[in-house]
Image (cartoon, rainbow, N blue to C red; front, side, top):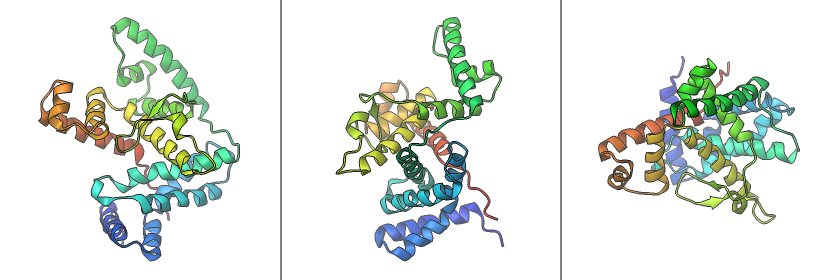
Length: 260
């Protein structure tokens, strides 16, 4: 009998709550098996971007999944998949960097991104404002989703300034230079990877949902105060938040690959 995805998510959250209250190796192993698709999807993606075998990347990804299970707090209201992906991705990136393997993006994406930058500049001059992603995609004759994926891939590949500010799930203003690992704390590099992943996703949100997410979740303003800054009502801020969270989850949650 086939098991629905909603049933899996429900069972998974119950196990995560049990593990958070009373952690055990047995529960942790059940959660790893339940979310194995997250690791396989990410390993499949990275195996097409580097020279490392899929099997090695998959094994490394499980360390990230276990770390996510150990740190996930169900009371925070996040979907586990969107919380776990940065940990899994971070472990794989850390592994690739240790192996001195350069991460690359497909040539089509690189060419599309370069062309998109030209189109962005041209449209800005014509429109007298920053063009929307949908407008750039239309000019490039690609879907908005493909352009967003291309832009995110290019951003994740670009080196950041050590003075650049990175963000986490909670308000935490830390520069990239401060987040670099030292011999006493390798975990700093992992957190830096997670911040970059979320920062890139937030930057891709539409303007109003992005402002709502940053003001309420990062700066911890009330919805009333956020509404005043945005120039709208608290109810509208709530709708912006719902859209922002939904879009972030769509960008950060991978699709589970078939296992059979």
